[in-house]
Amino acid sequence: MKRLLIATLMATSSTFAMPAAAEDQDEEHAAHLELFEGYLEISEKYLDLAKRKDAAVFFAIEGIAEIYENRGQAAEAIPILKAALETHAEDQAIRNVIRFKLRDLYRETEQSDLALAELQSVIDENR
Image 1: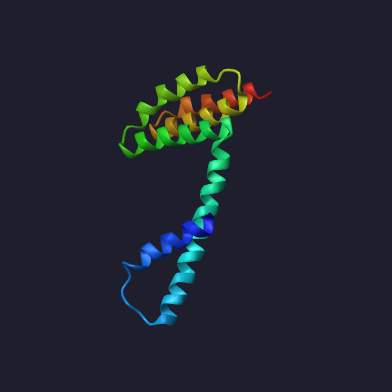
Image 2: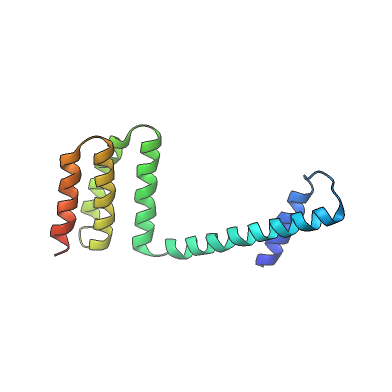
């Protein structure tokens, strides 16, 4: 199935390529095949990882923070992550991830005392 998908993608992409010598096309197709195989391998690993609850929460936290940071509104992500702390009160691994991201957001918004407080919370909660 994977090879079929790769072959289809290669065939589609080659229809838009400029005409070249057969040997050049073979090399180009081999390079495309290698690139597509690498992409599929990474995609499969990502999907496997995303099935894990802690990893899925991590991806969501990173995504939320990234969107707000790209908008120049890093401070807007803080209350969302603080609510996530309450939601995941029983899962220390997830709490650690949230607290580290809060630390980053506090640093970015020049709230160094709150950033230090998050790190201290990580230490206290993991004793």
